[in-house]
Length: 264
Image 1 (cartoon, rainbow, N blue to C red):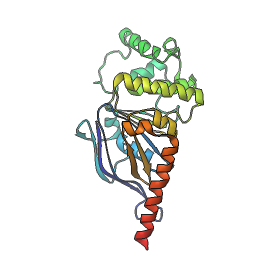
Image 2: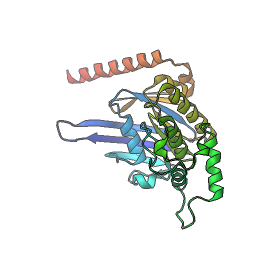
Image 3: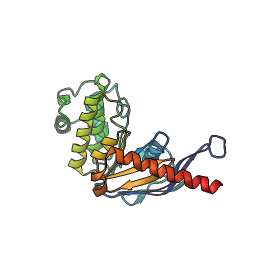
Image 4: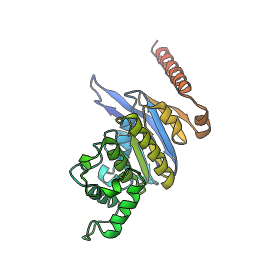
């Protein structure tokens, strides 16, 4: 479970470049929720991900994971509870290491370190088994350097590495945006399959509104650091891209009119 309470984050406070990136964000994801996040550039989506993962701390507010206050816990220590896949297929893996070595590191993320051998036969068999689920033949290339994989193969591996330890929350940060359409479709299908298989609590940022409608059971829309729309599963099933665009224009128009009234 994830709970964000009154999260504020301001950049360059007190300067002419001051910008409110997150403005009183309140959001709860229960076990198994899959929430898609849409919004224009600068809406605060990536900052939201960074605050949840511990890359940056909020100026005010509270972040809870599985009932534990992690607001001031470092990114490194939060990583035991969080899986994250980035937009860049080159991020999230070590290109100079083999597939097997990358998987071994990810596998040990939330386990106590020991002096035992890193990759046993039993663990190697497990790696092959989970790689087979990708249907990319990577189970036969355990000793291949990750830097030699295609973007789609690497992103599939990143998704697997982020999820096979069943994290408390999975963060997907536009993880299909840099891929060609066929590879993006592959990763989208894998995402749904893996999230469903492990019943993972998931927050996914995307600019693809159709993807945001097709995946998950909830949807939120952000603008100027605020959540301006929340849609539950029943409402989401009835929405179209056109509906989302109209709602965005309506809410933004109403807010602008309200702001002008306050200034007049």
